[in-house]
Image 1 (cartoon, rainbow, N blue to C red):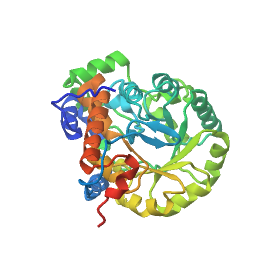
Image 2 (image 1 turned 60 degrees about the vertical axis):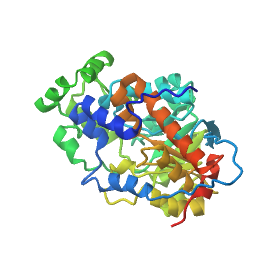
Image 3 (image 1 turned 180 degrees about the vertical axis):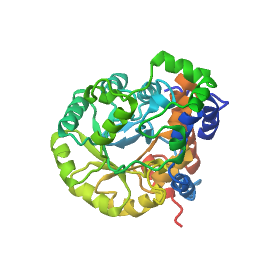
Length: 383
């Protein structure tokens, strides 16, 4: 596919800076922030960038291919779009923009249970290729119905989220009124008035809601009641007893997201998962968490041939993707990077962000003289 890039914004950091100027502060801080003192979010990227790669300039070298296989499917690059909650709050219509871009570029798009587009629409926009992340409900009937909807929509992969047993402590969200229940303060209204493009698009596409959950939500709830309903309906906790009926019911590929330890990896293998995504929720849940790259180094060598290991949290560039793949990941996902792109460039943001990451990653492959993505571990410079 032809690469579509805006040369004024050649990096994710450039997109982040522009997005900050186009989004209301409460929306940008919800996207950009971690929890507590932001230690974990900073550590994720910093530790990834400690990884060094070694080129092989004099070897026989043809050309590099970025094509990658994971979960039995081939993609054009070893990265996909991670699930993000409340996307339409951060930028109106953003899940649709990203789903279309992912499909155009043949990379996976994962839809969150608690985002602002439903399973059926995601499937339509991706021609049945969207993955779905299940935020496990307390009610078994709701759980089973959501799984049935994902199957009917043709989702090839169901991703179970395990790293949100409680809501993260995010000081900026508290100040901005974005903890449940949400509040629209005078300060937030003034912020909206100062971002006319965001405000116009919100009017155009409507107030963001939990589209996947509309049919399970009682009518007529005020904001406080909606918050209480969400808190009661989705506990976020997983254990073997809750996973077994999901594994029995779901006939496609099953992935566990939020794994951070060898013990959880062993349990995932024993319970019949096809893959895991090493993640600490982008530094939004546990500020004392180990960085994802250090979890990967511990887990990949022992379990890489037993289960497909993927990673998210902390990646911001093509070189970051190459570093993670060299450390043993089968695939990578990013959430914030793509939301920065949409916040910066609107409808063109998804295509642009994918394009710069593809270009950056391909340049690393060419520079290393590495022909295949699976050969990247051969270029890892051991510490």
